[in-house]
Length: 57
Image (cartoon, rainbow, N blue to C red; front, top):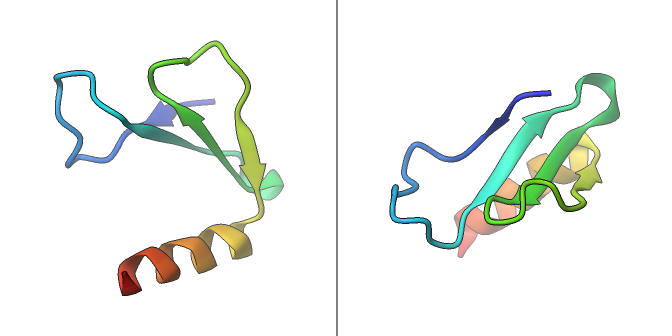
């Protein structure tokens, strides 16, 4: 599984969320400061709705 941050994330180690493509299982989300901790798995549909909502803010 490959985790990635947004291209807009800085290199100064701030508050970043990383994403991973989990195939049919959905999308993984984790805190970049705690890469060995647990991660959240959501469906692709839920992730799409999350992105649509954030874009409206």
